[in-house]
Length: 139
Image (cartoon, rainbow, N blue to C red):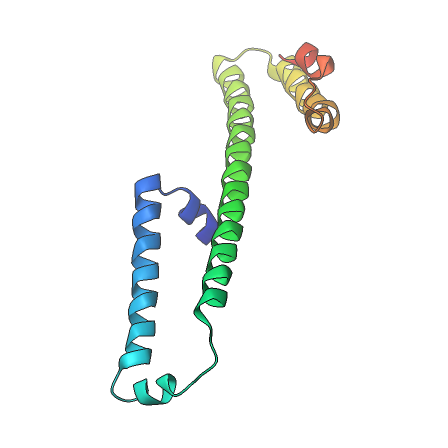
């Protein structure tokens, strides 16, 4: 989990450079295995791998990796929005406590809003709809 968070928190140029370095290193290892002095003749003795089939597999893997990356990026974007809203509610609670205001009513309003968002807003968001209950419960 920590590794995924660290990976997704990288900026886009760093992600591209890391992936390019990984694939370059993988290619170098394959070239070394294929043409190296020790195991090169043994690896080149294999027959039967047809290049067009290998190309099709690479294309299918590339498309699959692209769809997976898009899904991971979209889920991370949505999770960041939820984390931001949660941080805002925590800040609202801390601000009310720091000002010495009677924060019991504010705490109740924050809980009511969080319950409305979780119970009403999120199920409706699957259909692209909004929840008026969550909007009305905003403190």
